[in-house]
Length: 374
Ligand SMILES: [Zn+2]
Ligand SMILES: [Zn+2]
Image 1: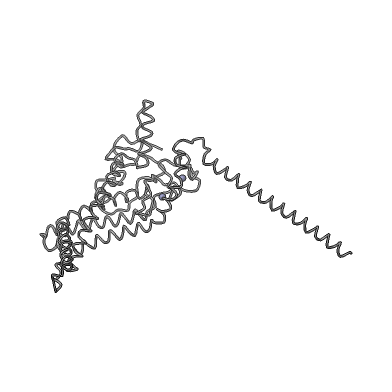
Image 2: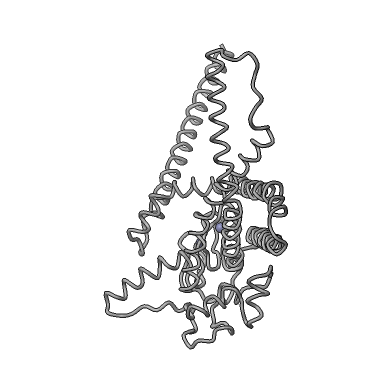
């Protein structure tokens, strides 16, 4: 009798415990659901609520997944792009050494040979130097700690004080001084400290490709007609095989070495011509921006500002435009006439004017157009 009572009490206790446990679990679930809802609400609010919200912010928010995808692809494939650039450039250099240079040495006069050897090697040196420096030099980031650097606004992506001419790079996920762009084929950001290397690389690579295309144009014509002949021979051979009008295979008209030679020349000419067009256009565009004293991002901002002030009947003037020649002098860091040779036409590791965060008129500016700008 007593044992039955104990069993009954035990069962009731167990039932009550299960009820309590279930309620506790339910409460915990409700609490976490509530937290999740409030977190979601906060996320939506942080995206939507902004006293400065305009159409640009909304479009930026809508395109955020696309930016995310592009940023991650660029980050992952950055090294692959660099390897590709190195492989393509090396293949062209190898073809020039194996196919084009022996012909130049055999057929050209001593003066032309000296010119080809000097120019070709100088151009190659400039390409390699500027590519290495552009890829390895830090673009220049504002310090992460609290500083006295004057800022013009707050970066809405990393919520940090934004000094003049700095812009947010979504791949580095931080502000960059005088940001140009993230170049996938450099696996690096292009900013204040490596802008000169980037432009010089584009310029010397274009010049190198023009040199290779012009030097190999006659060889390309011959190689192209030889390849056409090869195709004709192949068709003829196939036709003979179908009709069974031969008993012995005729000797091949071109050896494997000759075939490879012609194909390499065609590859050299086509690749160099394509790069000349693409990189030449890029170098021209950046040259135009340097002449105006602005970057590609600043051009967009300046254009908007110009239109805004025009409506008010005022004229906008870019405070960083020191005049055409002086913009180039500041860009290349040319302080004396000798620097046009030592700093522009020869490899030079000199630093650019300023730190890319605070802006004063550089000492090399000679015109009176330069003004102090923050
Ligand atoms: Zn930022
Ligand atoms: Zn970056």
